[in-house]
Image 1 (cartoon, helix red, strand yellow):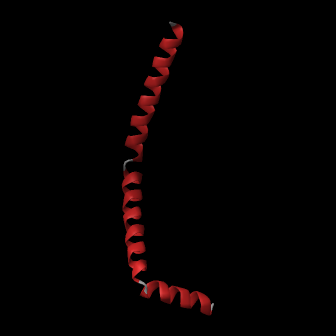
Image 2 (cartoon, helix red, strand yellow):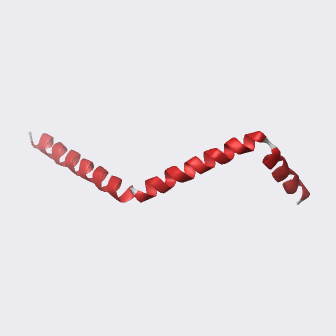
Image 3 (cartoon, rainbow, N blue to C red):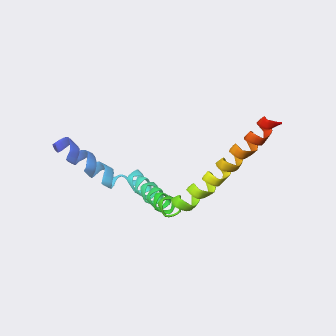
Length: 62
């Protein structure tokens, strides 16, 4: 348990830990944005895949 406390203390004091925290916060914002627009993006991708399937069927019938 002491090793974990030492590690966390060193991590907090280390300046590299600040940049790691910033990266984690940026990643969290990106994930929240992705979650907000997932339905819209899913519909867009679904429509593109359906069109591709239709085009491939028409090509196969030639």
